[in-house]
Image (cartoon, rainbow, N blue to C red):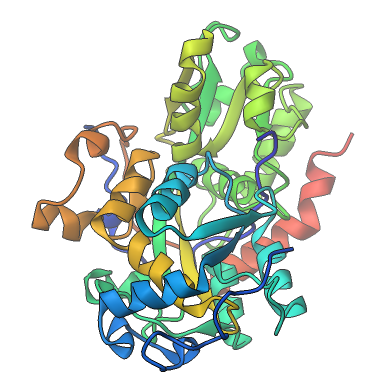
Length: 387
């Protein structure tokens, strides 16, 4: 894969700090009649596994459909490649991953433009702002996975239309073989050593990762969740210093040495460290103490999913211990981190590999704060980095 999706979104609810406790340590149609389960019930209206008569019946209904249509899931994003492979191996259900390099808005557009079509996505993985928007538009099906009650209340829609799945911190990745001293803070990025090196994963007016980078930079430079402008101004200074690199960060640009310093989610940067180790690339990761910022993404089911049973089985899988530990294996903090730790089902070895965080992020922006920040970025970003 050479390009990451520009997933536009930010948090819209206050989340528990423990959930991100990264402290130092075109498809084919369904083979089954749409909506019918093995027991004759309508899968499209099922709100829990109990509506199928139990997990065995849900599995049978999903296998009868035979396919799951997902969208914008890069294989190297939060370990989604392994998660999709394991789901297929476990249930024998084919997965079509369309447009893996797309955006959250692309997902919503596909849901709305393909309503009633077999090509519509069954499930979506959205940033919080987009999950809330999709719910308001009536696009999402209410469904509560088996462990729904274990997901913290601040991390889910009470009706089960969407819920957090995995998250991470904004981080600084650095090619230690091309950079003499890797930056550890946002303040470091203004040093003259980093001419043309500092890159983002996309444009913050469209990409969630880049938007998160600007929010983190704002917090590092006297801004707040109510004031993202200092983050925009900061990257303007990075540009003025000659350090800003307009190339969008991807695995390919990192491997080629085109983006030696990347401001991106911790699970992506940590994954690159593993991915390129055997190729001789020393990719180091730091979570800046002067701009600690974190975010979750959200799972949701298309209300008009062409494979409604498979969609619900996918959610059950992702929120099982296997699925949640799958995210953790990709350096992302799963929503059920605390519940699994208490139950003794957490992959402690994987948890120990999470990048250390000096200052955990504990208060997340509200929907109003997010909307205001996005408006400010949209209006002022291009002007800040022009020239």
